[in-house]
Length: 64
Image (tube, rainbow, N blue to C red):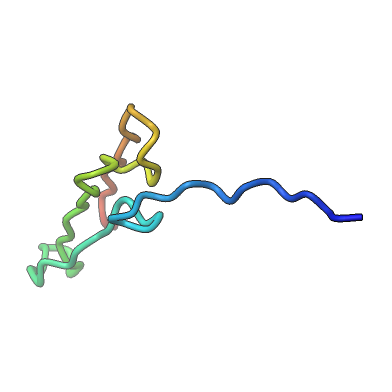
């Protein structure tokens, strides 16, 4: 008898489930760490799924 498995979750075709990335700018901060930019996918707005209409919150972190 065949086993039924749930359908895999739908991922954004542009970011393939990696909706927010951190990009190193190469600039050194006063404390010696590198400055980074958080960039969200333009299609899914940081959710990872094209079906979700509300964007996920992006958390800004301070480097210690």
